[in-house]
Structure formats: structure tokens, C-alpha cells
Amino acid sequence: MCGIAGIFLGDNQGCVDSTLLERMTASMRHRGPNGSGTWSEGRFGLGHRRLSIIDLSDKGAQPMSDPTGKIWVSFNGEIYNWLAVRDELKALGHVFSSECDTEVLAAGWQEWGPDLPHKLRGMFAFAIVDLRRKSLFLVRDRLGIKPLYWAEVGADLLFASEIRALLEHPRLVAEPNPERVDAYLTLGYVPGEQTFFKGIEKLRPGHSLLIEAGKKTVRRWYDPSQIDPLQIDFESAKEQLDELLTRSIEEHLMSDVPLGCFLSGGVDSSGLVAYLTKKLDQKVQTFTVGYPEDKSELDHAARVAELFGTEHHALELTHGDFFRGVDRQLEHAEEPLLESAAVALLELSHFASSHATVLLSGEGADEALAGYPLYERNLKLDRLRQIFFPLRSSTVRSAARRVLPGERMAKYLDWLAEPTAARHQGNSCDVTPAVRDLLYGPGGDDGHWIQNHFTELFGRTRGQDLVARMQAADLETWLVDDLLLKADKMTMAASIELRVPFLDHRLVEFGLALPRSHKIRGSVGKYILKDLFSECLPRDLLFRTKQGFPVPISQWFREGLFERVQRLLTDERTTARGYVSPGYVQNALARHKSGKEDLGRRLFSLVVLELWHRRWVEGETNPAAALGE
Image (cartoon, rainbow, N blue to C red; front, top):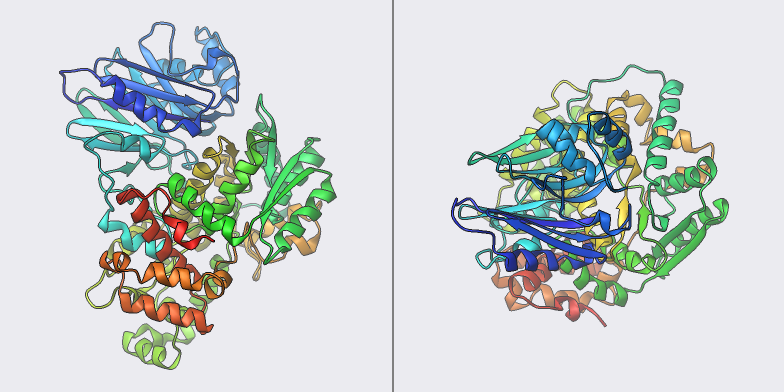
């Protein structure tokens, strides 16, 4: 796991500025404390920060070239089938000098060119410069586990694992992207190609970018939405899932450094621990985090750790710890991210880093196997909208809102007006048209971009099972631009490599293809996985409410931190930005304080947005200090 950076000069004249390349690379030291390197020749330049995981010798140093010195690679990630790929390349006459997966990329490019990614299993973002073809190739893994950003400055193109590296260029200035403010406030993250920084884009999952012969081509090389449904009985499906998961976990153990597992006490992380200890006979270190206001997750994790005999480490945080961690979260997430659990993950990663360098996580199981309650809820709402068909009229909904006030009720009234294909905007969607009217006031953003984005995603899966369509949409939005962004940035901030066995693409494809009844039964999502895990985990743990690493934000914002939050959100600097209506903020604060509504998530989204602006646009080094003790 590493950090990559690079520059391509679109002008045929001139050479890469080596000092700029070095600054870009140095800005990501946390991603690779074990080594760094830069290489440039003419119009091309590559940088690399190394976190040593496989082949700890200097032979794994990057940027790395092929034996001819004509092909150069800077790589972030892990290729789990690299030995098989290397054997195939050896049979074709290639010679290797290291025990490092990076080396197969240069040789693989020689053989397969832009089709190379199809040969690879794993998580990756890498750049290949081919001096023979005078080309630059950028690629991101199938599901976007590893990030890759890029920006054009005049005729030049810059790319990096993190936004901060791009901002080292003197002509790239941190400015908010006004077209994505509503996306953040609606979803809690920014989906799609654009970021929250004006002029900076993300290479999307399963996409590549090739510059050759003066032409830039962005191409999709993998599409998880185009999966044919599978006709399979439940027991056969469960057996196949067991095989896929076992194989994936086994592959994810590839490491020359200490390895452990995050353990929230939930289904997915507990199942991982069970498989590691019982099926694969591994001695496991486990790590969890919690808060004194609610120790239930700490207790659940401790119970699982005892059940499977792990070496367990628990971290307990207070709200003071949390808000001191918000500044670090803002620093490393880079974009505003409505993930209170991200702060806990960041603190836990630093805590775990003295024990392990590689950590496994249960991330992705809910998308792969339909674990979110919203999937079942949307199916129920589709049935209800047939009964409450008058609510399809905006006039009737407006009248109903006067009788049934509150944002939560407004959201459900809006949801009942539309079928799931038009309603579903990801697992985290928290703003519907009625809420948007309150949030922005007259003439504010109408949510047009968000609606179009999800309409396009659902259009690509037209004709498929509705649950699979929701899964596919969440894989391309909520998973990659929120959960995986959080997972990568918070762990890499502590120089930890995070691995996600549930996101082996073969397992994800299998989950998308399964019949709906295998994934959702009654109100139980992820049913097939829970039935599989029932052989090794207690039933009460399997069927309890999903938590993750919960943070008692609503309680804090109603009690000890209310005045500080109020002061920040009503400050003249905050209101002058014009992101939301000042009247809305005052009303939301009052309703939350009184207990009439739980608006903790909404208030936290506004807090993060303001602190992001102060950190990244105005350059404050510690903007969350006003909320600390």
C-alpha cells in the first residue's frame, strides 16, 4: 500500500519540474513511510511513497522499470494473484528479479497493454509510462478500493493518490465546487467524477485513462452492473458463497508484515474473525473502538474476541477525543465526508499501528449481499405507495406535511410518491425535495444533478431484479465515494494497509447475481451470509441491529456540545457562505435541542462543511478547536 503521483506535460517542449514532483510525493509521506522515489524523463514524471508489505527489500522500490528502462510503473495496492500472472509471463519469456507484485505490471503491460487490468485480482491504482509509445496509462481497480485523482492545468495532466498532492501545483487552488454542495448535503459525500474541489476529478472504479499520440481517452474496462442473474438453489448458493469467501480471505492474508482484523462486533467483521481462526487456523489480533455513552459495541466485540481466542485490543474515546480527531479527519479525508465513524476509524488505526501494518475489514458485505435495511424498506414502500396513491400529488403531500411535521416524515411522504427506481439515491440519502426546500429556501438547488445521476445508474440496470439494481447503484456511489474513501484515507493516515475480502470481484458478482430471496427474507437482509455464519456465530449477534463503529453525535449535540455547535453554525462567517438558509439552521438547532426531532446527522453535516471550508479554503490548521473541550 502506497501513494503515487505523476505529471504529464501536454506541450511537446520542456521537461517535468522535478521539484514539483518531489513536493507532490512528499505531501503523502503518511501513505508510505518506508521509502520514496521519483523518476522523470522529458514530458513524463512519476513519484512514489512506499509502505513495505511484500518483498521488504530495496528490490521493491518504486518507481520501477522493466529491464529495458523503457517502461516505468508507480503502483498503489496489492495484486493477490500476482504469482499466477508472473508464471504466465515467465512462460512468455519474461525474467523477474524480485518477489514483488509491482514487477509483473511492467511485464504485463508489454504483453497486454491496456487490457492488463483484466488479468489482475486485487485492489490497485497505478500509472505506467511507456517511453516507446510515448504514452501514459492510469487505471483504477474494479470496485474503486484504491483512490486516484487527476487534474488538468493547461495542457498538462497531474495525478495522485490524494488531492493534497495535486494542490502542490501553484496554479491549482483549493476552491469549493458549487455544483456538488447539494450532493454532499444530500448524501454525505460527493459521487461521480467530480470532487468537492473545483477542477479536480476522480478516475472512476473500473476505468482507465490513456494518453497516447496527443489524445486522452477515458475508458470503462469493468462494469459490475452488467451481471446476468443466477438460477441456483439456496443450499448450493450457500456452499458456493462459503468457497468464494474462504478463498478470498485466504488470498488477503498475503503479507510479510504483522496482520490483524478490525472487529466492530457486527456480522461481517465477526464472520471474518470466525473464518480466520476456525477455517484458516490463524492467530488473530482484533481491534475495536467505542464510547463510554454506549459500550454495547465494545461488549459485543469483546464477546466475539473471547469466543475465538483473539488477541484483542479495545480503544475507548470521549467526545473530547472525537472532536480533537475531527481536525485530523478533515485533513486526511480531504473532501467533506459525513462519516462520524471515520473519526473513530482514524483514531483506531493510529492505535492499531503499533501492533499491525495490515488490517482486514468487513467493508462491502452489505453492498455485495444486500445487507442494508433500506433495500427491504424500499420494497415495502413500493407496496405502500399502491395504497397511498394520493400522495403522488404534490398538493396532497404539502397538506400532509402540515399535519405531520418534521423532516423524517417529509422524507417518507416524498418517498411514497415515487417507485424505488426513482426514489433510491443510495443508502445514505437524507434529503428529498421537501427537505431540500427547507434547507435552501426559495430558489435554492433543486437536486437536479443528483436525480439525473441516479437515473443514469438505474437506467444501466433496467430489466434486472430491483434489489440487484439498488446494490449496483450503491457499489458505484455510497461504497466507493464514502465507505472506501473513508477506509483508505483514515487507515493510510496511520500508515495502515486495509484489506476488504468481501470485495473480491468474484464474490461481488456472485452476490449481485443471486436470486432476491437468497439475500432478503422478510425484514432480514444479507440472509444467505447470516445463515452461513450461523454455523459459527451466536444467533443473537447475527440478527441484532447493524451498528458499525457508532458515535453518539445526536446525544452530544443535544447536551454538552449544543452551545458550541450553535455558535459555529450561526457565526457570521458561516452564514455568509450561503450554503444553506440561516433560518433553517436556527430552526434545526431548536428542534434538535428540544427533542422534537433527531437532527444530529443534519447538524453534523453542516458542521463538517463549515470546518472543511475553514481548513481547505481558508487554511486554518485546527478549525475544530471551537468544538473541543
